[in-house]
Length: 444
Image (cartoon, rainbow, N blue to C red):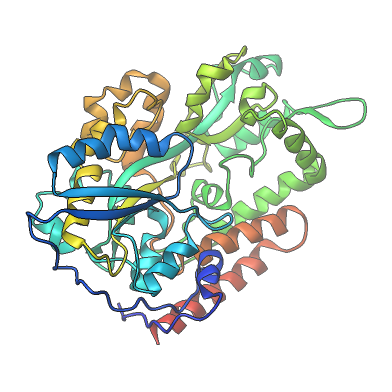
């Protein structure tokens, strides 16, 4: 693969990268290279940036960092909250710090963005550290490991993972004359069953819906994969306009037209005001969502019967799940690389992963390490087992320098199509041209 060019940072380009996936920032040379570091006897404080609020900082410090510092008395960890930018999963503050030569030593980072940032030289290559640490790719789920590797080099260690399945309301199915113990396995079955579950009030507004193919975790990517499509071929070429992908977007548009996107939007917004995940309102028959909504059960205590199953797919196509999650990375120019690596290795391999997974409020988290999940006996929870069983073959967003651009643009196109403002094939053809042009520009 050709080395991607980088150019000096200009005002505003940091934010552009986070939104469009296109930028030209180059990190300044650091005072300490990747192989430098303090002596074993010197007290070092590493700066760790994270984007999560709520209970994360206090729980992570108590359960993981305090143990790390006891085992590594020469290393102290300074935790710094740095929020992500807008609706993105990355921070323009982090990008600016890297470009200015003042990055943190470690960052908690969305795995989906590792390839994009590695391609532009914003992350340190950890391959040499991994190679001498005893850490193996097989220690992690294959899809999670794939996301931290770019151009044959390792740029992070996987941490938490999540994946998606179909939640189905057995009570609503039974009321619609359907067998509540036989959820749909194909998209045709889903369409037929969902149709029987839409209910309107006297004003023509929906009181309940069967299924909406853009609700919760139902995105274009998910629907394309379940239609048998792919966003990237075996040669690494991006294929957003593949025929099955176009068909998936047309299928989504069909729901918007048949059931009226305005009324569907009004329905979802009304339920959203409850502050409860839409599925737990007992007004949605089928929905795609992640393992994390199982955590709601302690507070919600649903009064209806429900189940979890793999998402339906087109006839003859595999029923997929898609996985995302987080990783620990070392930003380019980290001042204490050796100590930063010790921290990354600890928190993202077995010891730290177990410490975090065994915390009191772990809920239905899935770690990136199958052996840890086995040790925790997570599969003893039959509903969580559905998600665990699918993880080894989970789909992930393409690892590409334009991963952010591709994701953001497909989201925009999805909105246009379901609101009747564009034709699926034309829009996806244009996207294909744009991502190819952007890759060519970066490789010049």
